[in-house]
Image 1 (cartoon, rainbow, N blue to C red):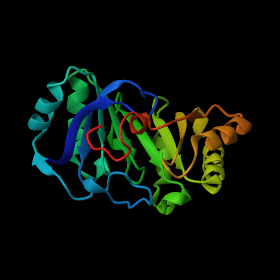
Image 2: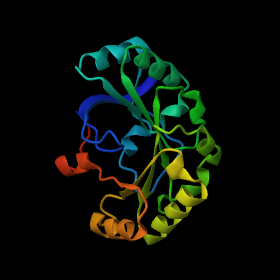
Image 3: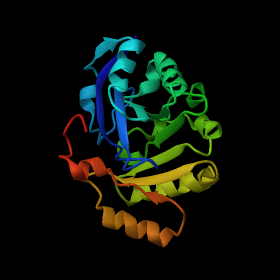
Image 4: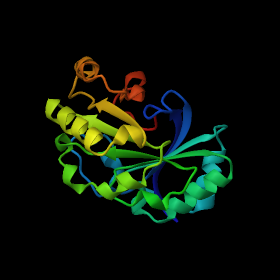
Length: 212
């Protein structure tokens, strides 16, 4: 059984899969309390569903891209079983994680999207930096940038951990806190192959709307 907050079909708003139709499985529970969190409703709310019940809902949609997110999905051990099962059904599976739990439990071909928390989140000290060694080249590493201090911190992390040779790296402006134009200028001056990532679902729909 997994405690599930919501399952919905939408446009993938982030990652190197941005713009693609995607089924999202949002699991309940998170071990962090980021200052800019936009899914606080997933901290506690949810229903217990079997893997079969979850997959039945997913398979109702004609979509091969699935993201398991949260909250923090790796808090629930059964997340690994769900990801493996979906992959065995020829689904492309993404798991978005905050990097505090061991990502090695998710084997290939599952793609891990690891959100490394910058100081502006208030949770930067919680990262398991051993996860850097566990990255695969098709994984994504993202940093949510709230201000110039976050930007400098993220750039140092990218360089110190040689992240550009380990996975795709994405910088996201914290929605409503940092103007994307400003972050774009900083990135252009940096001249590194880091991808600017906008949360496009928040531009298509209302920023705090659920189920998108």
